Image (cartoon, rainbow, N blue to C red):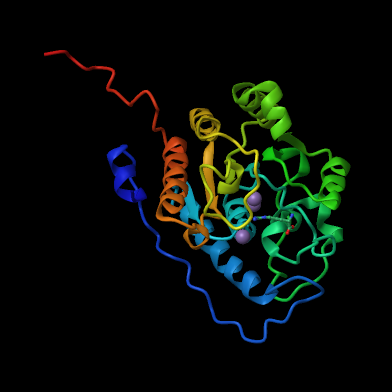
Length: 286
Ligand code: ARG
Ligand code: MN
Ligand code: MN
Ligand code: MN
């Protein structure tokens, strides 16, 4: 099932801006425990410029990943074009470790830390990261689906008072209440454009197993799609990341297709596909 033809069928005008090309970086030694800083920094700088251009063309921008470290460039580029953003981060993980708190050194566990104003003083200098300017306020972020948060990340989330709905809260409130509250929260003052960063590992691994860091106990397919339908009807979706879809991590063809199909459905939900079907209001029965 491939995305662009389906989105045409859904009635979307889709423009493929192509792939971001990456420069080869040799001798990309870790800095502290941060892995491949030069490659990730420079790739994100290119992505940021590309997203900025797409937003200046007036389109809603979709990033297909790939690693969640791409959120550094996508949110930065988005913020360069639309200075005040809210970020809805749907993920099993908070991805808010700083380079100094990260237990793994993987930058996919850190993207938020580079983007938040309030964490700026905690970010050490890294090669090819100097172009990054913090561009999101802690109060403009909502997490949904959390269930694997490192102790240091938990500390950061609490310290900055960042709004979040763990899987426990999704269970307690139900996904419709979670989305209602999320939108009340992000739209409480002004209606800022939404950057939706959707990690496929937010869904349960029974649906999307082909991903790098699966965690049991995730969102159902229906909860996952409901999030996209709700975001769509706000009319404020301005850019989205669909990340950590990794066919190489699928053990069977079924695991790969289930993961990819879920990602496709989530994107289509963001652009208006309704599960009841999209039917013209002026239909005349023959
Ligand atoms: N918290 C862990 C880390 O910082 C896991 C992050 C997983 N993130 C992801 N995008 N897969 O390394
Ligand atoms: Mn990753
Ligand atoms: Mn994740
Ligand atoms: Mn993630």
